[in-house]
Image (cartoon, rainbow, N blue to C red; front, top):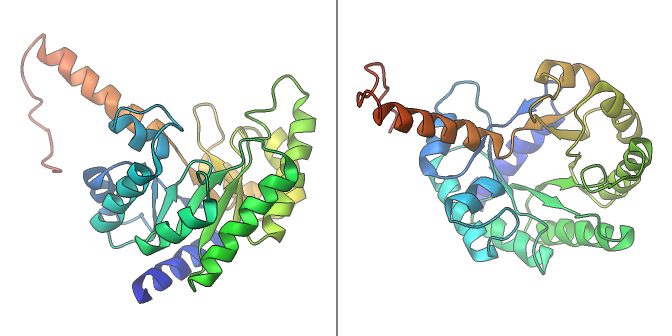
Length: 257
């Protein structure tokens, strides 16, 4: 557990540093090794959507055992802190986190799926209690879907809901609050004001602000979810299309694997 404990503290320090933590999401051993080989990489994040897709499951539909096995493949491939996307924590989020820690995972995204407020907070508290019982400074990136599942309500109501939930998650011990849908200054500024600088985590979806802009606004962490795999799959599709035409692999193809 010493290595896991040390990696958790390394991830904690990255979350608390003034500079925004940029994590490039991966889904298997070779994608993890490719990203980890870059000198800028300080931590690795898995993309649950991407792991599920690689096994033929829809996002959110992958069994827990497979989700943990996929994340363990990434942990074994690198010498860096690994934070995993564990959907909503599954049926027993505390047990899910205990199992994750046992595999060397030192942080996780766990989403509330806009469950009732008290239930959502209780699930976060259970995760933190489980991590503390394991003696690990587990970095919970507690996700609220207040914006992306907000439906037709005004964006300000969704932002207020995200702040209320996020504050409660932080009070329960979460390291950060992950708010998908925070793409503009108009949304990010009140979130940072409500949660505090260095407490908001975002996803760099197409059309989002640049990482440097998020950093200037006080965001702690940016990840990229399934978009990294989509870029890789586009490259696969494009080269396959070209091979059906010219039939020639580009001469500058690197031997990454």
